[in-house]
Structures are given as structure tokens and as C-alpha cells.
Image (cartoon, rainbow, N blue to C red; front, side, top):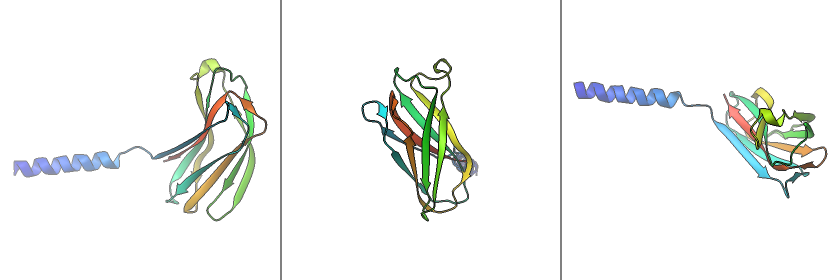
Length: 143
């Protein structure tokens, strides 16, 4: 009987730990050519659940030569049903002393609800070439 209770207790503990797992995170990064971001970068995210709320962020990795305070860009989003949303967005870069020396993540959308199952495409295009950017990426956090 004691052995049975210990097995049940262990099973219950494993089930509780599995259900308390953190949020899923999709991170996709693309390297830029010659440390200059000048071309559109396209990212895909496959949505399988239309009920989850997601935080979507843009992330940059850069070298010591990066000094711009803001990065104006165009964000193009294409949903699985081919709906297109294009908008201007500016990444406001905090002072370099206040952040890690090589990477920063910028919130793009909080609590976004992706209403269709399938592949979402995000295209990030800088308005002008940005020197010192080594890679650019998109992060989709499921809540």
C-alpha cells in the first residue's frame, strides 16, 4: 500500500510539473550581409492554436559600431488566408549603457490573437541601410 501511494504521489508530481511548464517561444534570426541591414528579412510562424494570446517582438544583434537611436522600418504581415497588413514601425533604441552590449528585443505586439491556423509571414524592411546590425529576428511568445 505504501508503495502504491508513493507511485501515485510521484505520478501526481510529474503531472503537476508538466502542466506548469513555461510558455512556448518561437525565435527566428537571420544574419545580415556585411553587418549592414538593408534588405527585407522574412520570417514565418506556423500557428496551430487560434485561442492563445501571443507577444510578438523584434530582436537585433549588433556590433560595437552601432550608434543609431531609432530604426524606422516597414512591417508587412501576411496571414494564412492571404490578408495583408503593412505598417510603419520604429524601433527606439535605448542608450547603449542601459542595455546589453550586443542585443536588444523590442516589443511589437502584446497579447496578439492570431485568428487563423497556418503560416503567418512577417517581413521586416528597414527604411534605410543600418550599419552594425549583425542579425535581425522575430520572437513569438505564447502565453
